[in-house]
Length: 147
Image 1: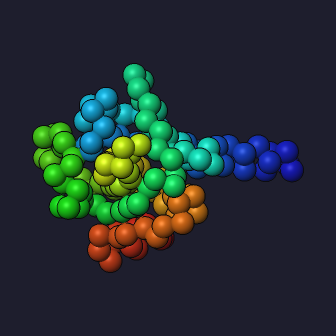
Image 2: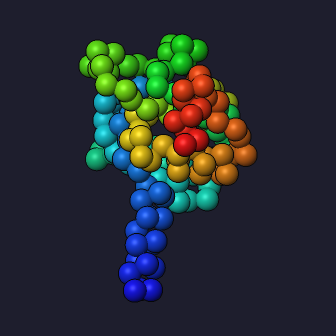
C-alpha cells in the first residue's frame, strides 16, 4: 500500500512540473500561434516551453509579469499575435501570460492557454520561482486560480 502511495505521489509531482499548454501568441518569432507543447517548471532557473519543433527558456529572474485570466489582457494584446480560431472560441479558456525581458532588455510576452486542472499548480510554482504575485484579471479569475 505504501509503495502505491509513493508512486502516485511521484506521478502527481511529475504532472505538476510539466503541463500541457497551447501557445496562443506573444513576441517569440520562432513559435507559431496555436502550437501545442508543455510548460516545464522543474528547473530551478528557467521556465521552459517545449513544442515538437522548438523550445523557449526564460530565466525566472527575467520574468516581470504573471497574469492569469479567462481572456488575454488588452495591454499585452498588441504584443500577442492571436490565432483567429482562438478569437472565435466560445468555451471558457484559461490563459497564463508571462511577461519578461530578453537578453537585450526588451519586453517580451508569452501567452498560453492552459488546462484548468493544471493552472493552480503553475501559478503557485511561478510565484515561488519568481517572487512575483500573480495578477488576476478579475474576481472570477482569482477564484479559479486559487481554488
